[in-house]
Length: 134
Image: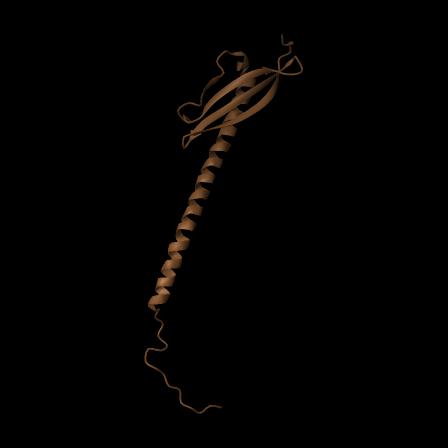
């Protein structure tokens, strides 16, 4: 056992930070924080783009089903928008010949512009016309 008395120096044992520790922490935060914020913003932008892409695919599927169900595929006007609820999305449809002359391929495309760049989703289905194509 050690019988020597312990000597406490003045200032020891206080829980204060030194100026170097504070500066090191601030420097680390200044380096890391912009990278973290940039990563979060990138994630938010990617999520917004994915949401728009999924919404466009859903709108294209709805329009495709509507055109087939109502028989509007033979109309001359196969383009439009989705009304005031979704003005940023435009649609167009095209009916093309298929290998089997009694079938036609219906393509419905939905386009939208995001940050000055145009994006497009296209869905296709075969439609039975019953009569051979000429």
